[in-house]
Length: 319
Image (cartoon, rainbow, N blue to C red; front, side, top):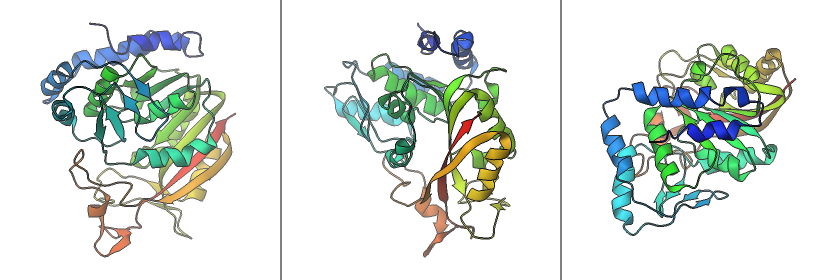
């Protein structure tokens, strides 16, 4: 069986990343060969049961459409539900619409006017199931390499790949610190929804700088603290019921930290209060979502009493 990451090597030929054209696909396959997970056999059976469909990719739309509609959409829906929870989307696979937790298309609409990806090799850290990779390809990217260690999201990407024609949108099942030492040369790097999970956020910014080529562009999307007079929030305990929120800076502090890392032309291009119609429970993600994580009767506060989520998008350049 051909590794799903084998075409990545071909996609990197002729780019600044060609020296890693063999190493990166091997990392993805090695992870899958060694991984142990209680749901792995169930997921693999669902992938094997996906029906044949004529490959199709209509990407420049809020819900990228992958694959022609299949004869039995209900049977396909049951198989796709094996990969619950679906968080990033929306998507349409084999004619089955997937209403994901996040309206990721709304986030993309806030970012897209500020970037030019034509001909770019793109690194997407914390990419989830690869949704944004399809949107990046539709915007002209040459190749998208996503990195995410959450195995169910990798399985969702494999399900999408089943319906798509051969396109250079890849999800490597790795943590970003497992990328090869010395890796560099991406035209654009995205970090969306990652920084606030890092206990050492400066290290993450330094890694993003290193992965880019000189002149390359960073798109950084993260929670920020939009409260005058406060530089940052370091939650003790949970934030919006999340255990792993370590650091929420003010926009001004984060712009300073980006500049201190070496980035130039640092710009805040969007500041947006996260709404319960953008992040919500759906039949495809039936766990609690944002509405259950805010204070009852006061959507300006989290359940713990912290300021409610505000997300910002920054654009910066590596000198």
